[in-house]
Image (cartoon, rainbow, N blue to C red; front, side, top):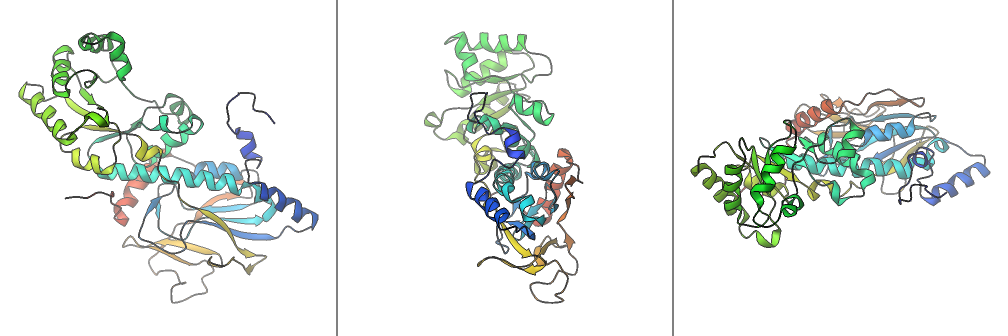
Length: 396
């Protein structure tokens, strides 16, 4: 099949139909059907078998649920916005041929979105009182822009820049001006560009002037504040090769704006920022645009494994056999236990005060859960507090 759009994009219908799969699953279906075998299995999606101390934020569950819609399966999963550390995040029960071809797409949905959401949560925790926006969709294939921005919001970011993504997830994108706009007015005409922007855009658009195009950041920041009445912020996006001591530059801009009587003009910073930079600059900066740390976050290395077949224990070497449950305890702990309740002590037994995290997602092919993005983001913030999730920064 050739995609009529001309873009190298796997269409949604191919994903739903199970054609976005690794070829060996086609061979598996062919073989099992030839042998007239279709066992009922329990399969689990897991990153780490045991806790490692490295928490991650689960995302991608909404798309995973839609993948199973209409299939002869039951699915349980941790809710979007919960953190996990070892054990299964999803459990699938049903005839194996009902979901065999879906494994590739399922793992892609969960792995990529979870990595992005976790990166967003790291950024959020690094600057908890600052505005943090997702600016990274330009670093990834445009067909996944909505996943990037939804996962960024799930991780607690305040907004995003991708217009089409906003249309998909029902949120409005935000943004002000690029260097190209200032350059289009010519060298030495920065004031003309800033005033033209102020006159052209609607009242709901923040007045943020980009102040590092041609001249020193301090110089352009003061000029912008003088040129535009009620300027909200100046944005500094200086190329890395021209930054020098970036923290010193930001502090100097803040000092000079205050000294010139522009205490109400905020500073917004973007360009190659990660949690460490957000942590170090948050004292002087009102807002940040974060790109590749979120959009290019490493996907979580999930795998799907059969752990029971026709009611009997089954797992390949190196995997924990048997149907499992995961629990959150009152002290923020994450525990993995056998789901049948047979163990009354030891490492396979459930904790006494544990909250079971795997909850119904799909029953007989029907999605039985709603997906409220705001509620999921709130849940992520609360769970991050509960488990003590911290941004990976050097606090010194």
